[in-house]
Amino acid sequence: MGAPAQAAPDALRGEQVYARCQACHALASDRVGPHHCGLFGRLAGSVPGFDYSEAMKKSRIVWNDATLDRFLAMPLAVVPGSSMTYSGIADPAERADLIAYLKQADGTPACAALSKPQS
Image (cartoon, rainbow, N blue to C red; front, side):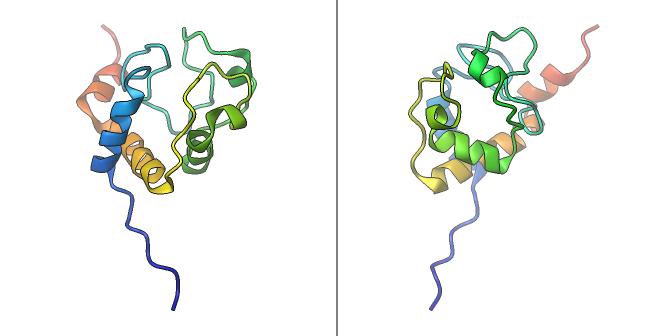
């Protein structure tokens, strides 16, 4: 018998995990941490106007499923010197759910409004 199958990531559960992130982050606005709309494919430390740590700016990370999973597991081990003080999400299923939520976030009204050209 093989290993038990893992459930597919669930964006709805990921939204519940994201509630923990909201002490510092929001989808469409910068807070203590940068906004998460447009996260996938973005170079870490590159949101215009956000004051990142030098460590994050120099990390050369491009956010995708794998880099987010690694970072969310142990942020300070992945980017030593980062100003993100969260110790990470140990549970791989919770990380997968959170990543699923963040992937679909660009389709939310908050992200859509952020991406509209200002008139």
